[in-house]
Image 1 (cartoon, rainbow, N blue to C red):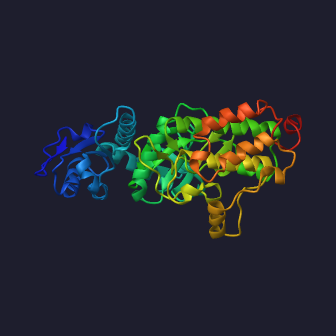
Image 2: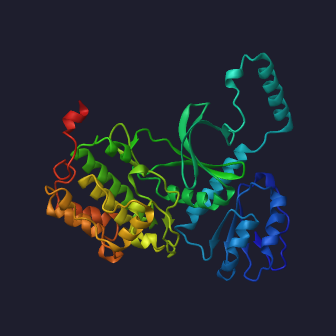
Length: 410
C-alpha cells in the first residue's frame, strides 16, 4: 500500500486477517503524519505499521513515528537486513492476532466462569490479579531488576511451565528501540553463547521482548566472591570472544559488554545478555548516542562516536579485570572516571601482578589503546592474536585464579 501525494489510503479489505501493514511513503507526500492516525482508525491501534521512506522524506521520520508508525526503513531495500526487520514485525503481528480478543460469546463464558470461581473460592488459587499477566500468556513471577530501558521480569507460561524473561520498557516511547533490539537478537540467534529471543508481544501499548531464561550467576557475582579458577576464567573469556565475534561479524556493536551482562550457567557455559542498546552498523550508520556503562566504555564511545573497536576496549577491560582483579580506570566519581578514561594511561597489568606474562600484558594494553585504529579491529582479531601469543590460553595456565579446578568441583 502507498500513502500518496493527495494523502489517500484507500480501503483495506479483510483487515481482521492482516498481521502487518507496510506503507511506502510517496516522495512528494505532504501531511503524511496526519494520515497515519486515520489509517490507525481503519485497521486498529495495535496492528504493526512499517513505513518505507524514500530518502527525500528522511527529515520527517520523527513525525511519522510520533504519529503512530512502529518502525521504518529508508529506501532502497536491503536483501540481507530488511527481511529480518520485516520478519520481526510480521512475527509480532502474528502474536498480536493470537492475543486478539475472543468472540462476544467466548468473553461472556469467561466472565461467567470467573464469577463462578470467585464465588466458590474453590478455584481461587488459579486466579491471577490484574497486571500479573503479560500478553494473556506470560505470568510474572518476580522482578529480576531495573535498568535504563525498563524492568526485567522472570515469567512463566502456566500451561506448559515454560520459564522465560520479559523485558518491559518503562514507556511506549521505547517501542522502536525494543523492535530494533528484537531484530538484532533474531539475527544473532544461531549462536549458543548469545541469549535467544522467544517472541515479541504487546502489553498496554508497550512492546515487550520475551527471551530465554538463563539460570546461573553473573560473572560479576562470581568475581566478587573470588570463585573462579584460572581454567574457568580462560574458558569464560574465550566463550565471550566467540559471542562478541559473532555479533561483530554481523556488524553489531553490543555497547554494554560488562560482567553484569554475562551469565555463567551451572555447567560453566557463558551467555551474553542485554542487547538493549546494541547498534547495527551494517547500513553505515554511526553510533552517536552516549550509551553504556562508564567503567567499560571506550573514549570514543563516551564522546558519542562508538564503533566495533569500542567493544574491543570493553573486552580488554574485562581481560584486565580477570588478570589483575582490578579495573584499569577507577575514580571516586563519574566525572573523574571519565577524565581518566579520556586522558590517562592504564596502570600496566604487570605492575599489579608481576607474574603475568608479557604477552598477556601486551594483548590487554593493545585493547586499551586510546585510538580505535590502534586496537584489534574486532573480537575475532583479538581472539586470533591472543591464541597466537598464548597457545595455552584456555587450559588454566595463563590467568591467575582461585585454587584449582579439582578444588572447585569438590
